[in-house]
Image (cartoon, rainbow, N blue to C red):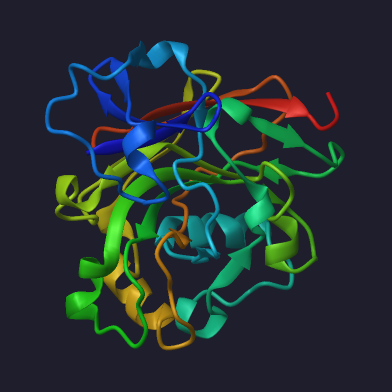
Length: 267
């Protein structure tokens, strides 16, 4: 099932080119109940709706650094993270992003500090479906509600990683939540990011150094994960600077496609 939030905080099921409005059935459930027969529900063309973040108010946005070898090498070569030269997740740890930075594709990215390099980072994102603490790797995927595409927008500089990634609109989630039953193996997902039509990032999640299950096991040794918590799994190589006017298109055969426009903050 593909669950989206759209327009004026409506909840929908995506089927083909249509969005069926299930708001009256959804309540506050992350994965709402929906009737098997959607034909009697109101629907809109997918192309006509404004897609919001499929998760409305996560308790935490967690992210893994340095999870693709090729990205580590490009970071070293370009010296993109001065002072952050720990290249092992177990030593670097995870980091948190402000929940206020979260938006959906239709809301776009409002870029600040135009004099500083700001990069796009496409990522596989998973969303927790059950409370998890001290979870073993072999059971970890049982706690996942579903998967999304994510953009982790990053200002380069010497400040703490969390600080530089937590500005309003710098966490984009979408286009919808694909439930875990439709993604039997999260390490078998293709991710592509195009900037103004040109491929910048193109990878397969089998290249992740730490898979989803290991990330959950590691995270839950430090803190409890709750339903709705959003987890970014790291970006592959090919990160590039963004500028106002750019069109970013993140896509995956398994997770869909989202178009995100970049504008100058305050405009």
